Length: 293
Image (cartoon, rainbow, N blue to C red; front, side, top):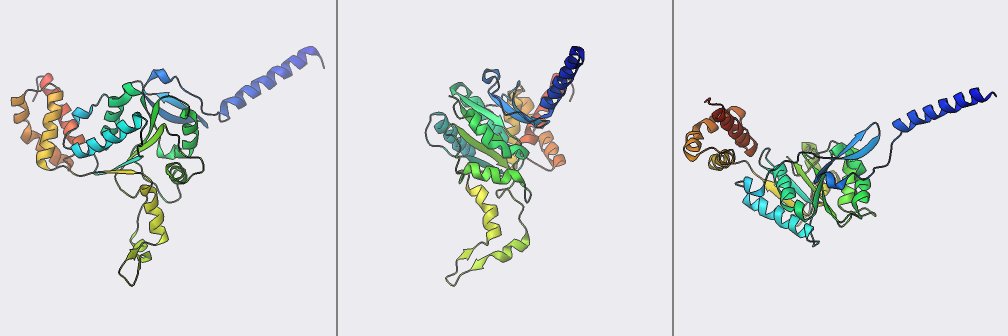
């Protein structure tokens, strides 16, 4: 074969290999850990990476009002974890917009200076949890794997992966990793009326759930710490509105004048949540800055 033809064949083969390498999955590699205190796990074209979060939410524990009990419990658990003492995986459940995700972000900001880091993982990517745990196992930092709005449909693969990591797997989670998840429901899997028929009543009056119900409860039980959030009363909602307005630099007379308007805002949205309070405060403060009412 002429040399020119051989060179052309080699060039074509190298080009083909380059294109194949671009589409084949690559093992998870470490990011620049100094780029941020928070990272997102992302998969594209079969390849996975940890992307640094360039603008981490600056929410502080002091910004969160009317959730003092929940705040104290998660702060204590996180402080123990950062200090290398015993701590639990945490499941934060309850009403929407009551501060579940904000509390986790506030704890990150509280302890980032002590080596705490956060990795956000979508529930569809939970099957890759073992790879993430292996990647950070030898790092000196402490990592919270964070999954927001967690729930599963029947048969989703991430359910089994999370269950194994939380408890029961031969390959246990690393000592420098905890899982913090939020959900609007305690039992993470859909429950149906027909499943109540599987409950068994013994002669001494005890009630035992059937296997299907036990399976649905078992994932939640693997979280050592349960923190519940509840809908806010009107007084609590107004206190949260006032807190956010102060953070936006609104003076006290204007905060008092905004009470009725904030209640109408909540009524229009059908919720007195912390999220709605923040949205109102941001809008109200923005209108005052612009000279409008």
